[in-house]
Image 1: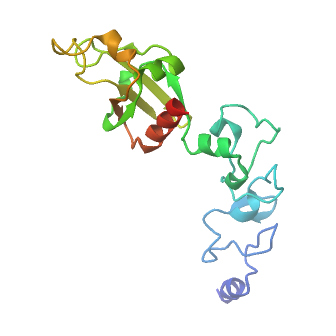
Image 2: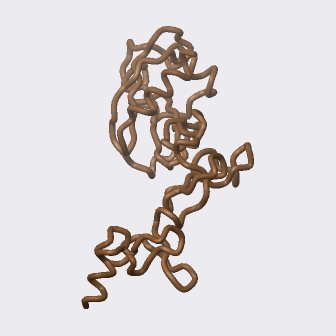
Image 3: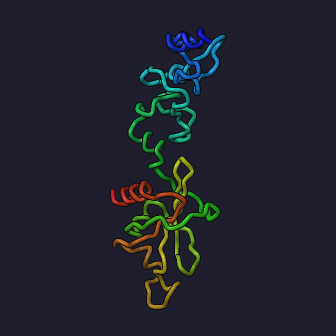
Length: 203
């Protein structure tokens, strides 16, 4: 027991084969240590080396291309990089701030997450015609996903003659070039999606 205590105090017990720091219980490096050859490696030394800055990445903290744009490697050939070494666009993909249109999928569930004012005609010009709504409360909708699998639905709500006589025609709504308030539905906070769709349709 004395040897164990002395080893902890001196930092010589179960030393990391890379940096020499103790990985023993009570050292602060025990939980995430991994076996290396005939010893142990601490998490700070056992991750991949960043392909861009050549510095060590903490274990399992590396970012790969499939987490950003779906490829096997980044455009510069890098495979494992620090989050801080990502480009602006790569970082936005990694954080789930970039979205692509997807097929309508009502199985994802969700609820109203907010609303956003957009020009309907711009949506059609940029993303194509909307998918059919329920022909009652909604006349059309768009579904978008980010690389993290989060899904958001953009749709009109009780705004056309499908809901009530005297309201605007469906074609008139989707060809309108003035701001219209759309509902945004999803399973999670839609702030990033709303910011993205607003920028995409106003730039």
